[in-house]
View 1 (tube, rainbow, N blue to C red):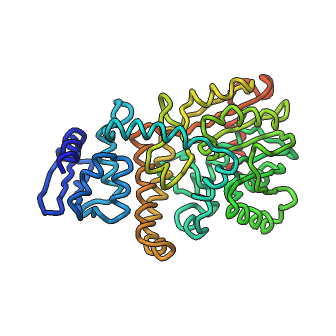
View 2: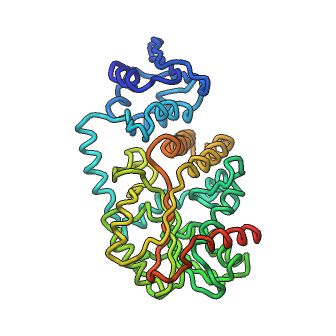
Length: 410
C-alpha cells in the first residue's frame, strides 16, 4: 500500500478520498470540497494497491474490472473525476505516471500499436465496433451517433445534441442538391442518411465493420433510399472515384500517425477540384502524446488521438487548405455524461448480454473518457479542407445560415 499511499498523498488535495485496505486499515486523503461528495473505496486483496501504483492508467482499470476494489461511497466516475480534477491539463498536471521503465515501454508499445496496415485496421475495428448491436442501442441515441455531440445548450438532451451535431457538420460541407458525398468511417449510416435527407445528395459510406455495414444497408433500404445512399466494406486506401464532398466523423482516430500523410493524399485524390472536406476527430490539446494503456489494450487497439499540429502537418504536403478549424472543448464531456448515465441505467441488461466484468470494463472506459475531456488534455477538432482557395465564401456566415436551415428540417 505504501506506493499507492505516496501517490495519493501527492495528488489528492481537493475532495475527500478514503481508502480501506483488505486488512481493514483506513487511509484518508484530501480536504472537503463543497462541490464534490466524498469517495470511499475498499480493496479486496493486499496486492491490488501497489499493482495500481506501478502502472496507474492500466492498473486501476484491471483491478476494477476484476472486482479487486469496491466503491462503497460514490461510483467509478466520482473516483476518476476526483483524481483527474486535482491535476487538470491546463495546470500541467498528470499525477498518474507509473515507473520510468513502464513509461518508456508504454511509449515504444504505443508507436508500434499505431501501425495500422489494412488487415490490422479491419481487425482493430472489429474489436470494438462488431460488438452486439444491443449494447450500442442501450446507451447511444436513436440514430446511433457514436461520436461527440454538439450542445448549443449544455442542458440539451442527447437526441437534440446529436441532431445539432449533424446539422453543424452538414453546414460546413456547403452542400448542393445532387452532389456526390463520401462518408469515410460511416458507422451505422446515420450521417449518410441525414445528409441525403436534408440536402438531397447522394452518399457512399465506407466502413471496415461488418456489423455496422449490415445495419447501415438495412436502414437505407427501410428509408427507401438505397439507390442514393450506399454502403461498402472497403478500406479508404482502396477506394477509387471522385466526390464533391468528403466527410469523416470519428474515424481519423483509427488511422495512426504513420499513415496520416497517405490518408490526406488519398482524400485529395478523391476530392473534386472545387470540393470540400470536413474532418471531425478526437484530438489532444498541446503536443503529441501516447494512447493510455487501458484504452490501447481493451478499447481501441491501434487508436490514437492526434495533436492539432500532427493533423495539419500531415495534410500540408497534399496541398489541402485548412479553411476552417474549430475546437470543441467541452462537448464530448457532455456527450459522455449522457452515455455514462444510460449505461449505468442499463447495467442489468449489459450484464445479461455479456457479464459483470464486461460491464465494469465498459463503465470504466466511459468514466475515464469523460474525465479526460473534462479535466485532461482531450478535445474534438473539426477541420474543413478545400483544394482551391476560392471554393467557399470568404466569411463564415454561410455556415450559420445553412445550419439554421438544416435544424429547421430536423
